[in-house]
Amino acid sequence: NAGVTQTPKFRILKIGQSMTLQCAQDMNHNYMYWYRQDPGMGLKLIYYSVGAGITDKGEVPNGYNVSRSTTEDFPLRLELAAPSQTSVYFCASSQAGETQFFGPGTRLTVL
Amino acid sequence: AQTVTQSQPEMSVQEAETVTLSCTYDTSESDYYLFWYKQPPSRQMILVIRQEAYKQQNATENRFSVNFQKAAKSFSLKISDSQLGDAAMYFCAYRKFEGGGADGLTFGKGTHLIIQP
Image (tube, rainbow over all chains, first blue to last red; front, top):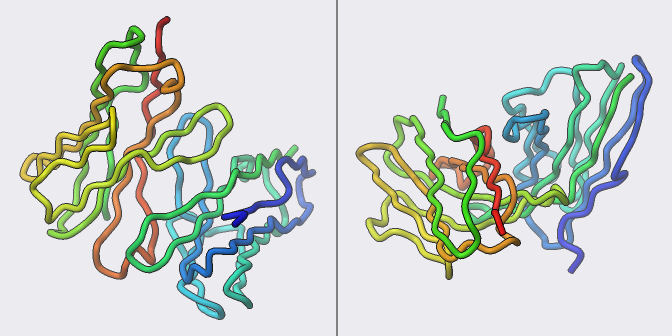
């Protein structure tokens, strides 16, 4: 079991560029999540999904989009990157009612 | 909305001694879960301990234990016999019981734990 994997590990974007952060899990979890962690802060929920084809907004969804076409994958799309999106992004997954498992994170810098 | 507050930005403890990290939370729910996560410099989020609000008994995992005071909405983490490998950021987190956690965790801002050799 690889658990939750995220790619890339690091990325530098220019203002206005777009990119997709990839997340995959091999634990057959129904629930998947995207969080961001700003310096000196805890994680904040961006989007979540309770199954393929079902997504919903979290606390800080502006500037992001997600899709969930399979149980395994939950990509996060950044359109028109802004410096405020400089952060570390974590993907997580869980079964309903169970503990969340986190990926290793993606450090994104927007210049 | 739920909030989680960690009032200690940084704590320092001598190796082999005991340290307690504080966490308070605000919720109108009666059933929920509380967690402590550890984040070492590698950035990986590692679950330390989990507490179900309906359980009166405090959770324990080896050297880690909690003091859960539901009425006071307090959830502190005690680390006994501190080791150098315990140095990390520690985050307290809350999750509603309803919905099975579908809408994610609410985190505090974290406490940076330093272990003095």
